[in-house]
Image (tube, rainbow, N blue to C red; front, top):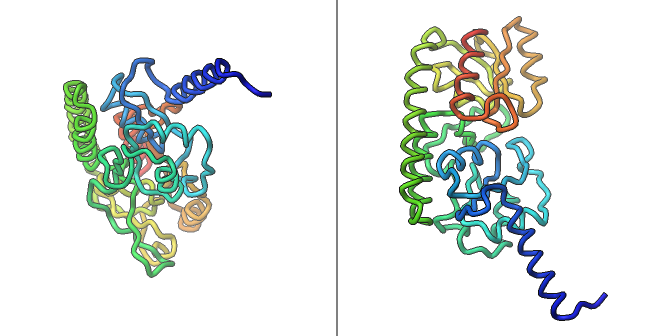
Length: 281
């Protein structure tokens, strides 16, 4: 059906409204943030508060390499001021390039990749000659403080009008993390030095708590282990079998904060994970 000029104008107007609504958040929020996963959406909320609207594509760390691009992702990236993610996944790099949005291209202040802001640990890999780095840095509250500080500096650079809000939110969040770190480290002294087998998703958290971590089942076969830890990400069958063979306790901890789960904030997440480990190990 052909549209006259008036109908065309209405169509364009309503399409723009729908595209804007793809960003969940306050209607008057200025900064538009595309957060690739839930844990980074929560960090964006902590730092930006009501000064931003935040879009998440519904991906998780586990399925990020297999995501199919959609119209909503494309629309959100075209209008985003900031992309906050933990890695340059192939789908994300392609979608950013396709968007043509200068705010988020490689080298722009709006492209914030958390794993490039801190030093990464090398993953012990029993089946590859290539060096792999653990990019799931959200699980370390000390690295998260550094990421929060650097992300805040970028937000201020992009949206100077809300600088005071970003600084105040960052000060509170980083302060809360500092208090949490001191609190938990007092409670977990009994875990220090114990050897555990885990998935890569929880390795940074376990390392922070002083545990000796092996993330490869093949390598773990030749080592002593006190327990097995895994998150809800990935297939736990190999870890469960390893624990069963050695009669070891197995501990399930959250992957990270999740607004739809019991640990809705980073503070809740770190407390819940530490409590589970103390209780089991």
